[in-house]
Every structure is written in C-alpha cells, then in structure tokens.
Image 1 (tube, rainbow, N blue to C red):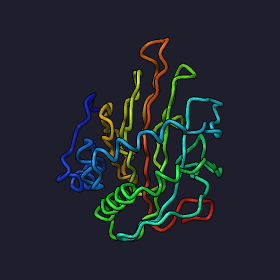
Image 2: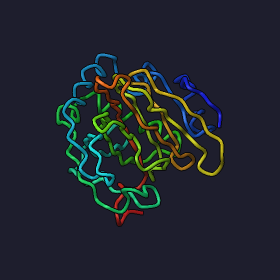
Image 3: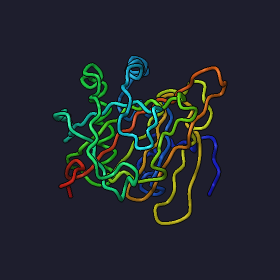
Image 4: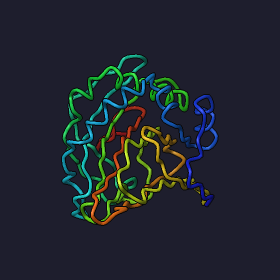
Length: 249
C-alpha cells in the first residue's frame, strides 16, 4: 500500500481521466464547487443541516455514534426529480453487516433537498457518471452522516472495506471537529494496491468507480477526552438502471 496521508489531489480538468485510469479521484473544495457549479456560500449555508440528524437506529453493533438522513433522486440530463421516500437497501455481498434488510432513515431536510444548488450538484455528479459510463438516467441516493465520539470511538464504516453496489460514489467531507482518525482508504477491488489519506478540507471529496475499488474510513476518537468531537460527511451514490432493492437487477 502506498501511504499518502495528505490527499493525492486531482485537478478538476483531470477528474474524468483519473476516474477512468485509477478508478478514484480526490478533489479539493474549489474543484468540487466547479463540478456542481456550487459557490462557497452555498456550501456554507448547507452546513447547518448536519446539526439535527437523528440517530441511526439500524446499527447492529448497538452503537449510538452515527446520525444520518437519506434521500433519493433521479437525474436524467438536466432534469432532477426527487422520488418518494424509500428504504435504503444493499445486498449482503456489498454490506456484510447491514445487507439484506430495508433500512428506513429520516428524509433529508426539505429545505436542503429543494435547494437549487443541490440540484446543480446532482447534475454535475450525473455528468461525471455519464462520462465514466455513458449518458443515461442516474438513480441517486444521498446520505448525510454525523459520526460522533459519544461511545468513545465513532465508526464511519462499521462494515469495513466495501463496495456499495453502484457506479459512482462521492464521499464528501463536510466538517471535522476535535477528532483524530477518520483516515480514508481506497483499495483495488481485485488486487493489493491502495492509497490512504485523511480528508481535512471542508467540502473536499473522494470520487470512486465503485465497480473497481473498495473503500473505508477508519474510526475516530476525541483529541481531548473532555471535548466531544464529530466528523460530518455527505455520501452520494449514482447507479444505472434502478435503485438497489431486493428485486433490483
């Protein structure tokens, strides 16, 4: 494994080439804003929506360290539409811990989900997915996460290194507060090569070709035992054909 503690940043101009060649790309906040035609002040007004996430009631390790919301959309060309709220579902082969069950999470805040900047961001990610595969409708799931240190240790990916069963994954760091850990690791799904680094800049992002790599984030702990800490992130997945479900292909 190549050790890269600082993110191996890719310029926006090289984003598509990096995804095609290396199956992943890390971009800074400026490039992520360019991807979605999203101004810094838009990101700033979104940050508050991480302060009222309900607890994830589906953690099989019985932890209370994860809060989240979830929403689904379909992007077809420039058309972005929200779909009725639905369960999040993954097969066991992609999520050995929580796969095979319908997990219902509280929906995204309506103000966030209807923000024109949000729709622009989804269009940008859909263009990236179409450049990676081919132009087509994209079935999008968005997950807001807050991993906190109330249990002493917070686990961003309790299922371990995994794929998501989609085409494109965007893992966006929203904030880090008073924590250590949370290192991102990306591995070749069919080999031993990989990279490791820690996202530090708010609204920087890791984009993944989910068919070719697996990924995980290591646990977080408090920097100071007396100061609570957390890690906020946004994970957006894009899939061809349909949303994942027990009957999806």
